[in-house]
Amino acid sequence: MPKVSFLPIFILWFGYDLSKILLTTVAAVFPIVAATHAGVAGVDRSLLWVGQNLKMREGRIFLRIVLPAILPQIFNGLQIAFPVGLIVVVVTEMLTGGRGVGTVMMMGARFGDSPAVFAGLVLVAALGLASLKGLAAIRARLLRWHQETRAAEMAAA
Image (tube, rainbow, N blue to C red):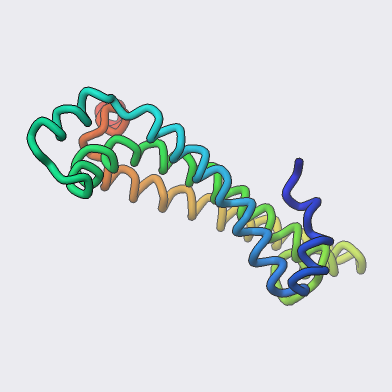
């Protein structure tokens, strides 16, 4: 079910301003949680056994084995969550008003101001591109050891 369809309920429960924030959070959290769950389920059990055999504490096993193993999946979830969050922010502003890009675009559409609508589109596209590029840079930095990052570096060279 589209998360934006919950907007009227969120407005009833939380008011206009808080409903935008909460709905965006709800929409963006699901892909991250799902990707993290998939990552945890995919951790190689033999690595966990090695950590246990080396008498590592649970916290150390998490930091040294589990977290590095699930980071690629977490970043996959973030790559999905960023655009979804941006879409929900713009749509909720279009529907509820405010002083953001969505409102400017809707006002431009109502009054036939094409430059305002296209400026909003360009701004949203630029924000989406910048956030994904930034996330990709962070991913490349944190996951230098991962085969996917190494393959991308070799292809770029």
